Length: 120
Image (cartoon, rainbow, N blue to C red; front, side, top):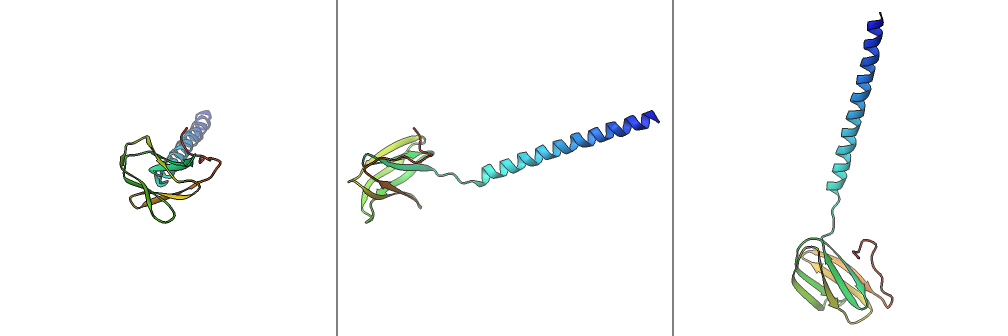
């Protein structure tokens, strides 16, 4: 009788351990799915002291900075991965940084501001 009682306790313990392992596998799969489903931008752009700064997280090809009238202010054939380029603009206003099909809008003001995710 004691052996049967002991085996049932061990069985319940093993079932509990198996459920903990299954739960940790499910959480790992969920976190992995979230990380792969989020698209990250290949670059960030911000304006400081009348200059648009472009930080490339991966290598960029054919980068253009245009004003609100689509006049090209700066053009870069290539920006290497994890580097920055600088484009001096005329002053306050709204400018677009175009890389291939992707565009990011940058606002230049008298008081410089940096986005939260911008590198230091």
